[in-house]
Amino acid sequence: MVYQKDITVATRGHGDMLDITEALREAVRQSGIRAGIAHVFNVGSTASVGLIEFEPGLARDLPVALDRLFPPGLDYAHEQAWQDGNGHSHVQATMLGSSATVPVRGGEPVLGAWQQLFLAECDVHSRTRTLVITVMGE
Amino acid sequence: MVYQKDITVATRGHGDMLDITEALREAVRQSGIRAGIAHVFNVGSTASVGLIEFEPGLARDLPVALDRLFPPGLDYAHEQAWQDGNGHSHVQATMLGSSATVPVRGGEPVLGAWQQLFLAECDVHSRTRTLVITVMGE
Amino acid sequence: MVYQKDITVATRGHGDMLDITEALREAVRQSGIRAGIAHVFNVGSTASVGLIEFEPGLARDLPVALDRLFPPGLDYAHEQAWQDGNGHSHVQATMLGSSATVPVRGGEPVLGAWQQLFLAECDVHSRTRTLVITVMGE
Image (cartoon, rainbow over all chains, first blue to last red; front, top):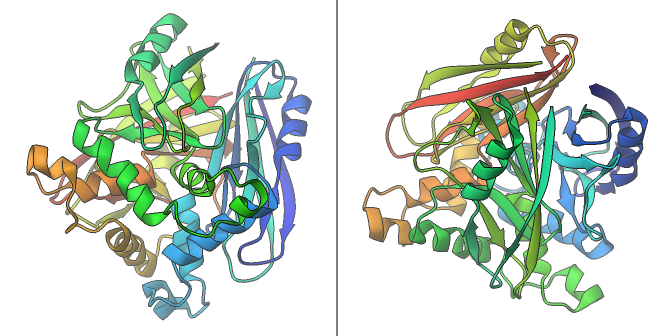
């Protein structure tokens, strides 16, 4: 069995973090799938999906760490071609990854009590993001 | 077909690396699935699962690199809320990722000769970790 | 339904980036699967698969960022055991990840207009790389 749906979320620009755990939970319930996996994929190359304890502190610490390691101010070759000021956004999003996969059991995603699904906006301005959620199993 | 099992492993604290390849191999064999994928997921937000050549040198190099890039001594916002001294653990685990997915063929996980599945403990003390292994295919 | 194929690509050594999106698209078409997921896995521990806007600028920016964060010249414990000069290659590949998973819909991989699948060679010399593509769904 395969269930697939898109969800759309609005971000407020660079460093914005959204908790999308409830959207995942809802998709898994709608799928009717009891056991398997759920895959959440960000369409586009300047935002990321991953897992974190979603609390205000870490929702700052992660983007801060990304900006420290892949700073906006470096001389990105991407910038020379496009002058859109988001070379660091691309490198950050690629390093963090485009998708997360979570087990499904008993008709629910399996997550720790302090483990949530996030979308991290790495681009330099607000965006509308489309996520494709695919639930597979039986 | 879907096969799912949990395994539990004990870690000795920050920077501990465990080779969990045999547990994956055993789960794939138990599943009876010949072709598909195997997904290994760490429940919790301060440990990671990934792939590496598992030898004593790299089992040190990876945690050392994580501590160099995401040092314990930085001023994490997570720390201000929780004072549990593991802000770096969270950021490290999120960057490294919560799960790994490996192809299954001929009833075995497909891995290179020098490619193993690891669990990396990023938290600051010893923990008991639960991994959910999901094998899907036919 | 499960479809699996191997593809082989030649890399030119450290920092080489290959766009493998067409190979993914072809595998998905050959599978006959309309909805589900496609998983692309690099066999071996010194190359990575991921998603990026594949243009010449970013194809330089990503390897440059990896070398900046995990430099060849550090004192890797891996080096003491093997003296093959690729400790940084292993750490880079593990951090970037061994596989990517993409949704499949309408018999095609779902990707943004500026989102492509890459193979990044992290090893210090040219290699022949085997990728296992698994398409699952219905």
